[in-house]
Length: 367
Image (cartoon, one colour):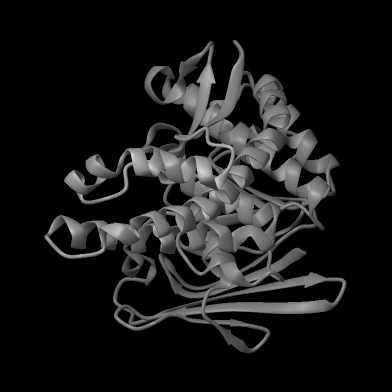
């Protein structure tokens, strides 16, 4: 699916904005503070129904206004599609696909996939394990849409077991039924771990390759570290039973895939603790590009790739390698930069360059 156009009203610094995307690479240029990153966020917001920069989405509404609306127009073999998100603080979002209301854009299979690189997303490398688990599960859902329900089913079963633990801990009944809940939780947990393991297996080679292209040397690796090594639901249920007393003491389940870890390492050392910020940024970019390659090969097309200020971390040779790859492979990408000269080949006919200034999108055309 190709994204044709973004339209936004009262989003961040924009009263009205319209951005037409190129078939391959679109380059947004302008000084710091012009509103380039806000367009990246608006694209993500229109494709997913949520912000990629803040959990307080009141911030996306232009100062002094009551509501915002973002529309993304896309096309595939079936024709044109329109996704829209309307948001007013304190009210439910209104999300629509081709005129029909939907509860969550992320559950709509026929929508543009999107991947974003932002400075704020360094938390994916240096933040808590929960951030990386959530990202891995999002990739699983993009790679195998039918498996998206596995993570939700596990979360529901875990919540039910935790509620029972809390009741027993406070003196209530129900300890005898915990074995049944353990097996129910274990069944979906085994499926969830299998999905995560399969996803990381597919990402391992392209992640290492992209690290090499972008200059992250000394054996960078991505690995899945499950909390349990059980091979069957019965084995995992037995592990849960062994830890029942400690779970009752804490009041929650301390073992299972909700404690798994996705590690990014270099020379065997965790980049979260031992990597420089530059190395962490390269690892994040390599992971997103690896995911894009896998989805391009296994799905109908790669996600729209949004790269904010990515060129500042790369030397001239690696900038050229990145841009050449984005131009030569299927899929769309949007890059922001303060200096067009930082984007190799920017004058070529297949690269669309759009200038942004003072919260306005100026007319863009193939450069």
